Image 1 (tube, protein in one colour):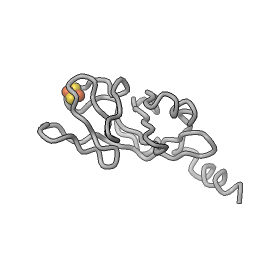
Image 2 (image 1 turned 120 degrees about the horizontal axis):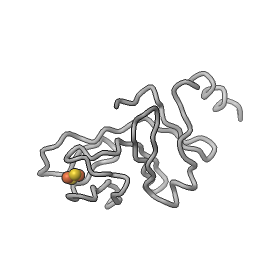
Image 3 (image 1 turned 30 degrees about the vertical axis):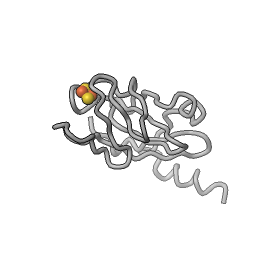
Length: 119
Ligand code: FES
């Protein structure tokens, strides 16, 4: 059913917004996007795409300038790292977990569920 995905997106058109092409993200590894006024970082690790808040929960460094280390997103300022599964911060840091957001990939495009965003 080639049109199932289109029908699904159409039903939820107000929520799922295209934000980046998958080839661009795959090449860059981390891409900054702004969706509905919220700054996010898209991260591709081994073909798995994640979306998280762009500002580090510790001291708001730009995580889009970070790097992926052992499957975790490392902050460029103090080098704490975050799980891309549950947002957990590395041991020894007093900050809250990283906020992760629903993401899906359809036909080479990354979509964010704008209804789930929290500024
Ligand atoms: S600002 Fe990210 S670890 Fe300190």
